[in-house]
Every structure is written in C-alpha cells, then in structure tokens.
Image (cartoon, rainbow, N blue to C red; front, side, top):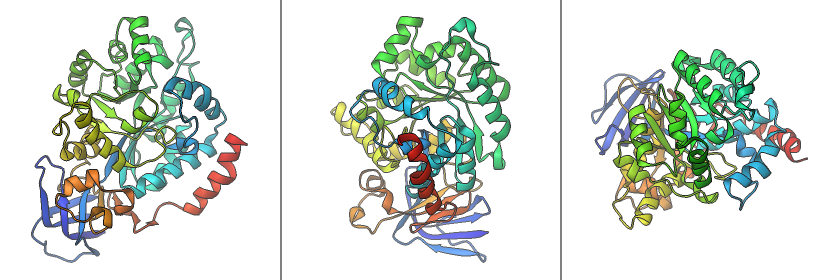
Length: 434
C-alpha cells in the first residue's frame, strides 16, 4: 500500500534538530520512500492531510515489563526491594501464560495509543508476550530476565529454568517477521543471580549475536552490595563475565560511576532512564547529563506499570527534561531535542535497530501523528518544546508501525479491546487477587 502524508510539521530526528514545515512523506509497504517539502508525483492508495499535526518517528520504550499492567499501583509507598519481595514476586508467582498474555495486551493497548511503536520488554512467560506483540503489529526486543538464586557451585544450564527459557525464546522468535521481533540475552540483575549464569548468558549472547538487557545500579543498596560481594559495580562484574560482548541496554543506572560510563561507551551499552519509576520507588535520579557528556547513549523507558502506574512516554520525556535542569540548577542541562532523541533515535540504537527511530527513505515506516490544535498544545511557539512539556497521549491521532496503521483517532486496528478487557477482568485479576 502506498500512502502519502502531506502538509505535516515534520521532525525527522536525523540530528538536524529542525522542524520541516509543510513536509511530505511517502510510505511504500513497510518502509519510507520519500521525505521532502515538494509533493511527490504519482497516485497513492491513501493521502493523509497532516495540517495542524506533527509527524515524527514512533516512540521507543527501551525498558518495560508490559504484563505488569495487571499490577498497576500494587505496593505503593514501598522502596524497590520491599516492593519486589513483599508484593510483586509473591503475586507474580501466580501468573500463567494466559494471564501474562492478558496483561501484555492491556499494556500494549495503552502504549500504542500513546505513540509507542517499539519496545524492549523483560518478563517471564515470554512466549505469551511475543504472541500478543505479533498480533499488535509493533516491534519488540524480548528477553526473559534471567535469574538464578541457587548456589554457584550447583549451577547447571540444564537445571536453570531461565537458560532453557532463553534458548526456546531465541529459537522460536528471534527474527520473526523480518526482524520485527528480536530476542536479547538477559540478566535480571546482579542481585538476582550469580557468576555462572552471567557467564552462560554472556557466552550465549556471543554465540548467537544477541545484545544484553539487564537492570544495573537501580538503588544505592544494590550498587553497594555488589561492591561488597565482588569488589566491582554491577556493570563491571557483568562485563567481567562477558555480558556486554555485543553491547546492550542497562536499565536505570542511577548509581553508576564515571568508570562505568567509560565502560558503557566502550561496549556500546546504553543507559535506559526510567525517571518516573525511580522517583516513585525512592531509588534516586540517574545522572543523565553526566552520562551523556561521558559519551553514553541515553534512551527512555517506562519500566513496569506497577512502579510507573502508566505507559506514558510524554510524562517520561517531561521528567527526563526537567529533572537535570532542577537538580543541577541549570535550565540548559537537558533540552527538548535531547529528550526527543532519547525517546526515538537513541532508543532504536539502544536496541540495535538501525532501521527505525528516524524518518528517512529506506527506514521502517514507524510514524506517529500528534495533534497541535488541542487546548494543551495551543499556542505552539516551539514544536519540540510543546511535544516534551505540553503533549499528552490523547494528542496522538495516529500510530503507524512498519507501514500499517494500527491506531487512528481512538480506534485500534490490530487489538480487540473487548477481548482484552474480558481477559483482564474475568481471568487475570481473579487469578492474581482472588
């Protein structure tokens, strides 16, 4: 199908940091064919008038746990470790494939309406998540979040469930639909596993050309405990075991050090900043400006909706922009364009995806339209400023993933909301909460 977007305010996110007025973009099949300010010749199957709208790449949620939409708000008021051990882990132990699928579909619906076209998800029952993503139409890097609580001397990949989960997930889903779904190797965190698992995951990543996804230095206690146990930070001890052989994403990075940042830049490890989750759980604020200045790529994630309570990239962008300015008492510490890059092109690069995050010929047609005429967007003196500081999910009028319109004007074209609601209310919630 050939589609023409015409008369758009266009943010290509190609590094130019310019808004192209009255721009035209054509899509042929799953890819962008033309970008410019002259209307291309030819006939099109559909022409979309973008007058009064911004066209930009879809958002990349670079660290999330989408089925945790089922646990939205559970354990409020607790720090991370009490929240996990007292509330989250006991509830998650009741999950099955069907409930995880329901939670994944619920989370996907919220993200799609907010303009997300690609995610990096870490969770259990990952096959059920992959099936929902396949139906939804967005792209995803999936990981199972490898854990191992046994003694190091007793470790065996044949007996560690997450080693087998990693193998099955990779065999079944890596490269699905021309790479729309990819698989990452994963280590949940230094504090939920030990060296034999780290070495096995690192070797598996090396053998299969996979990137790594891990939680890193989310809390001061986690960071210090790694120093006490290993004499190294979480990022460094994972590196010692080969975790970052193909690069990857380190979620949170709140307490990472200058030495960590040098290692991240060297290994192509991106920080995924999760400002809402880190603030709500009292974990702290990641030093994103310092990391950026040290050459670390910074992307954005929502974390799970149990600790964020929403899948709202606009609220994450607003916090990501404002927090450095406030904490450093410097209004120039983080600009709107910096944060838009975190949410688009940086997120794509963090996931190892060179085919998205930018509007240019040959790139995947992962595009969203944002309405400028709504009250909260009026007037618009600066498009980038409005997108970061004023916009809300309800301003998104279209979500196109790989050339397919999956959401438009409140209507989902790939998801059945009635089915999702029924699965959540009639099955998943009773299973978890009785």
